Image 1 (tube, rainbow, N blue to C red):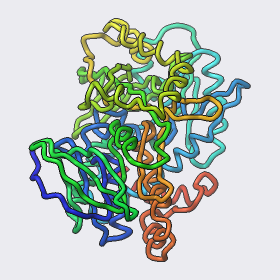
Image 2: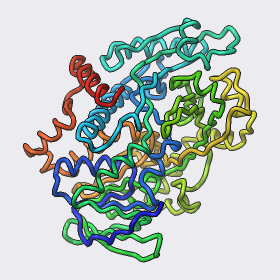
Image 3: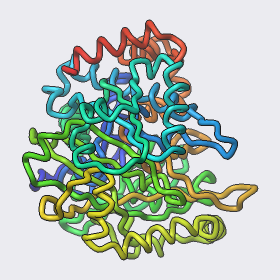
Image 4: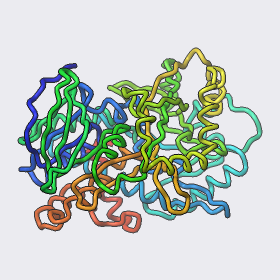
Length: 498
């Protein structure tokens, strides 16, 4: 749909590049902390949340680290490290608190439109994997964050949890699973659009669709001159601001490289696309009610973790399996094939070369994925749905992700698979790079940016009081405070109709 084109404001306190979940979160957070703050948002598409935030472009998993086995890696000595899972789970609770606050304030409507209770299950087979999952469960069960997690090796119990996964399963391989009933499925596209709708209704906020951010240059006074172009008229405009957030998904890297800050040096990106198998057999869709995550094959990157997911998209129950990788030199689904070549600069060439040399398995994995035939994808699907038939599934394109490459003193260049925040020394520019867990931890990530970029304001009494109103557990380590954790989960579950 075509949105009304609003005139560019010559000056605003804040510029948000991109209208995804991150910009929506940061914008609303800043307006709650400082109602008089002025904001301009630039979005190249005709609607908010249509790239990485779109429901079909991500797994929709409320990443609370309940079922994602790549968040609890097994070290060479056999020990399982759950520290990342604890951090992500605590961050997700902040997101729940933020969304509950928005619902309580009537900023967004019916929470059922964007969040649904769906159990999170980890499922493995084979002696080594079963032992790993059991060890993981024992460690996680000691933390308040994961109390209530169930573990079983009983096939009857597994069949009750995930009948579609167990139906027709043969062989003598040992099986095991864990289950968290408080897991969720989230439509981040719907959530983003609801948040942007509220944000742009607030005084001092201007949204510009069909507008591409091109560059940002210092204005000589501690702020920035932002250069943009209308994709409808090809006209170019300039606007001044004190603070810029670059939350443009895959396009963030290009814009970061154009910002004249030292922190941009050494960053590069490697694009990886995704594909889903989408079920259109209603009986199978109704039979399954969980997000079942498995373990990536040996040598495969974390992004390849297979999962069979119940999804709720635009009021309809869906069933997806994947992801399968695809490759394009585009950094956005609606980007340019020249995105990758143009991203290679003098300062990041060496990190990108060394990261590439150290990640030969990723290259091998992508080549293998590109060579997959429908029958090969069916074989992978049958690991999780043994009786699957090709005619019940269709291939659907997912979103495009840019994995972060950055310089490293020891390794020269490393490939990161998480979310990376880059902030200038003076706090006037912040950029978000990377992928999972991304949207699920948006509130915590944006709160961190507020702390780093608004250092004076964050310590004022007014801002502190407001932060504690939005995030009742702000400043607390929920992993160590079981009663507080239980209280916030019960409250947000009630507000969010979970």
